[in-house]
Image (cartoon, chains in turn orange, cyan):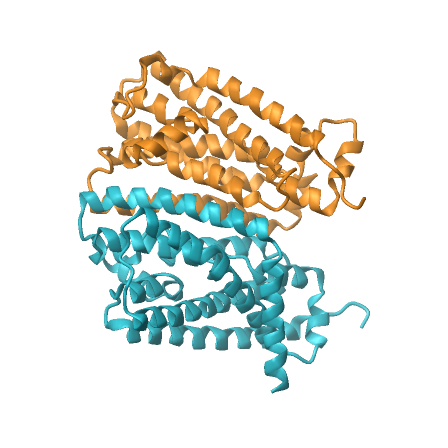
Length: 254
Length: 268
């Protein structure tokens, strides 16, 4: 339904899709401008940064397409339309995900894939089965981890009803962070991103193995393969947070 | 005199409307601070490779980052503000009621947006900049004169930003649903204001052109006025902003006159 309703204004949809593509493309343009001035950033070359950028953008784009609407929880609590979802015999989260399902978000996925493809063609890596498997796992687990951040953020909004901006710090902020090499950031920040919000498992840790780089934190060797386990753990946490949020929901007006 | 009082009341209501959402403001401060940190680290890495890139030393580059975060909401660098509401009123036809009012459409929305911007500057501007200055070594000026010039530049940045968004929103009269165009306006503004990267880092002729566009008046110029790095001095920067403000506001008036002649009110 939402797909059809967006299609009603075709010109606007086309501009929206292009704008969505271009917004993320301009992020990458800024990185290219940086590299027009320097040869390496934090010791990483342009194709290597493009690899980080592409994996982060595709994983985030997919989770945004599937679960990005979860950020509307706060608004629904405020205007009382949350009640409508509770009366239907379908899981609330599923309804929220389908709400305003926005195809324009394909723009980000497309742009991220293009950058990723370019990076792979320029990296001169030997694509062994292990590397390919790791790449696929990065996209899948990355999507799951970002999706969990969306769900936890949505659950948080049951309490803080007009704080959807906090979520942006973790979602949009997270994907921006992961587009740059971990060596760029302070060690404390990298630690926080690894252990507190496990965003580092989206691409930093597996990408370091794919690129044959040392881990700046000096973590145990197997940790860069732990993304699937981390993704599962995230699902459990997000599920629990979501149920807790839903339980604490009180309708407006009484 | 009566009109002035009216516009002041509109601006005040714009201020109070945004001041109501305290949790949202705190959330905004948090997000601006997180993005400030991310950008500050990437800038540190960049300026570590190339000291004095774009004519800034390291602490000036960091100051640029945090000025950007301070102005992001106030100057609506990602779009939004009055724009969404105005577009919605054009789409639904409520704009016909606005046109019936004995107040000019453009100055009404400008007053409302100025009120909003003032609150965002105090609520979401001052705190991230202060937090940034605690953690990083910023090149903030000591002279009160420079700060006054900076405040003037910020005010002009907000007016230019309003004038650009007004022009984009008016296109809704022809497109009906202008959300796509609104998004386009936002991304042009993010890129060409210097929000992603200072315009002085942009290479060659592309950089020169970018610095002449109206978006430069929204962040690049105020930041340069604060840092004392505007070519030709602070006065030249303020003149550049004033020039664009006058041209764009006049353009908005013209387009508004054409657009309002297009409105067809059903049943009236």
